[in-house]
Image (cartoon, rainbow, N blue to C red; front, side, top):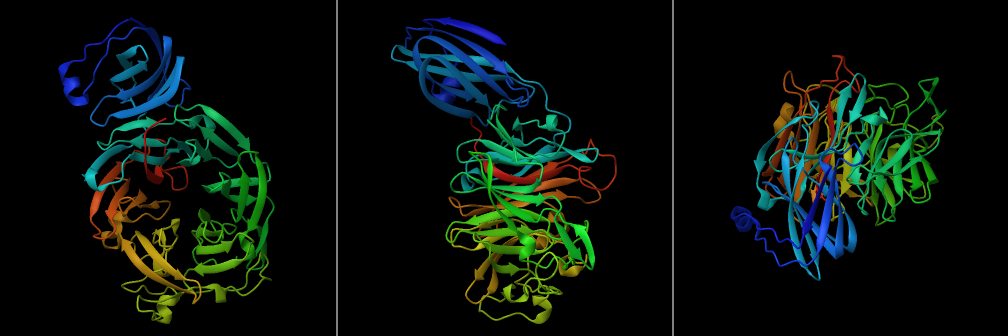
Length: 516
């Protein structure tokens, strides 16, 4: 902890700083003291909280100096201020410019904040391509999880354009995976484990922890609804399915509407009601994991939900619990329901057509073959609605065409015609990269409307060497990469066994402002 006092003092800024940042300094007629508390809540080591006591009311701004500076202004005007600092460099004597402004003038103080080294488990990051003028602003937020002997040690990170990690949140205290890392509209960081909803601020302060009840288990995705409530992928205790004549427990096949403010469940959807639980062509995990729901997207235009199911495809369900369509190969679909006593799912399957509106042959409709200009999303993740109403998703490509002979992953855009029940592929990126971009699990895709770019995350590249992940930002019109970064994983917590929690992963990434 550092405490410093200033008396009617106006700093002289070195010329190099003056040229770079154009600092100015008025004669200030007030005193202040500042107290620095590094990592104030013990889980965000590259943050600090500065407590300022001034003789007059003032406002504050800060700037973490460096190649990629972090600046923030704070509007509160008071004698006593608590000023959050995020974006410190690791293992560095950081220079942080604190500016206090009052009616009596301005004081500029350069604080020195020494940080420790990063944990050894964090990845080495190489920025391969950087065309900053063509990119969305912001740093690079990553939902990273590290091997921990069959569990996961969750540590979301934010790195800068030089590949330097400038913020991370060490969630190892929880002892299990906490995900997905996301920032809500009000600035809150939100993540969940199977039982609890966690809300943090950027300094690592736990704002709220809510248990959803012992009858439920959250898994894979939580989506913020327009009113601030949450839509959550869940499993529900003691839910059975009839799988080939055997009655077994199922997992993660419900959705929940959760009132975040009041901490209560509003509504549930049972996906087994609408789908064929016996369609096991893509299930390589366990029998009860027939769906493996991994992402949700809410369509405000008609209050519908697009569900990404690794083992089934993309599905659209209405808010009042009706099936709209299924985007998946047509092979082996039957009756819906937990015990196969529901309705025929086949009329809800979208027919694949080319850009002229002509249907492909049966081999392509059934997923046995892929067309040059069309393929279904195989083991998909992270669907997102585009402004034009089309859907973009990460097509992992696992077991494409029901075999292991055609391995590639890609971002793919689809146009769905709900009146005619057809789907057309509009755009893709990644197919030609083959194994170099092939991620059998996880991964993400985001559209950046300001730049018309697509950010694609291939989160689990596992060739014979150099286990890694890639983040690529692509110009939608040209397909040219404007940004590419590679995260090289270390797998320090692996027992050398296959399975969940034995390898480091990048679950998702997004462009993110590094600010409090």
